[in-house]
Image (cartoon, rainbow, N blue to C red; front, side, top):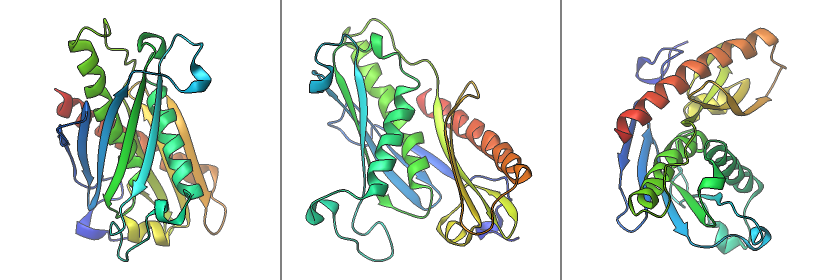
Length: 238
């Protein structure tokens, strides 16, 4: 099948990462994956959540949101509706889990790092872009602590990135944009580390169930795409 901009089935959209996008945050970046753009910031708080007050390790958590005109039509801010949607809660928990999986929290000290991922423009893959960008912001925030002599070493154990895959017209595709995502028969998100380990796999059949062979094909695409995203992360952090 043909894709926008003649993209091949196993080809990522153009990806760019701009570090230090926000002056006040200890870590920040703007990540663009095609027409999807997410602002990721990392803020250091010198205290732990109340439920961790007796622990000697740190914590990393995330919040996620979409700006009202990040999509084709304006959507109301969740704050004005009085509660977050189930989708928002799911995504921000996924971002937090993904970052905690690659940081030694014992070496972070008794502090919290807040990751805020705000979608400026959405064209599919906002959660995966948020994870890939949040890692950059988190790394810069940890570097801030290390350079200041607050922690003796960077507690990062791995890189982590995420990408979407799907079946569109029975063709496995990497990194779906909005149009592809809205027409896919199967939608999957993969979160993986630079060591090839899995943090999370989310998969849903939107129509007919998908086969083991379909899953393996999408997994192979995801492994290729995440390896490329981690290379881009390394270049951005160099």
